[in-house]
Image (tube, rainbow, N blue to C red; front, side):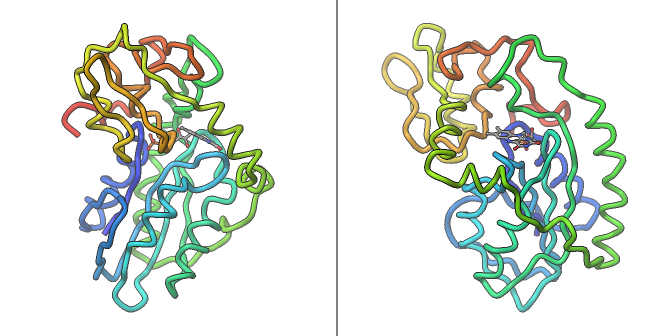
Length: 247
Ligand SMILES: Cc1cc2nc3c(=O)[nH]c(=O)nc-3n(C[C@H](O)[C@H](O)[C@H](O)COP(=O)(O)O)c2cc1C
């Protein structure tokens, strides 16, 4: 199986392409037990704060494997992968497994609206990433062993401290503007951790945000705010082949 987590579709794109090329089924990571009996297992996810998202690490706890499959991971990010593979490897080692191959694909950074407006997203990175996929598929087919990307990172170590976690939460603090919200429910549908719900007046946000930014980028009324600021319609991003509706 290919297990994936995605906010804005980059990782979904990679996961679905890998699943199709390797003839494996696709599984959206979530909490709870999942049995994977395949001899080849892939984990595809975005990098957050130089690390693997907590959501992914938590979801890995519920996975059980048959024997020792060929386990590989592919991380998507804007530029860097930090300690993401080390965290995945550590989580797998707790289950008596280890990553055999780790690959990184630089794609569009969906986090840019946290820092600016009028973003010229680097769409050309998507072309480069897509071109790299057949090579990745071939490496998996050849059962390549390459753990060279499994390493630590100062950035990830900082964001694991309570100060770092607090800063990350603050930097990506999302809210709902009740005046703009039309209660279409798209954000509720997209939220991977059911942190959004429809109230009488508008959508409301709870306290378990994973920072995937799906709601921010998807809202048709730009009613989701980041640190109290609106996102511009033209700054909303999703992978061009992975629209939010119909997911
Ligand atoms: C909260 C957050 C933190 C991020 N941190 C990093 C980072 O440390 N390094 C990086 O290169 N990209 C970072 N990004 C960008 C994403 O990793 C990148 O856009 C990824 O491809 C998104 O995948 P998705 O479309 O499947 O959600 C971050 C994005 C978010 C939302």
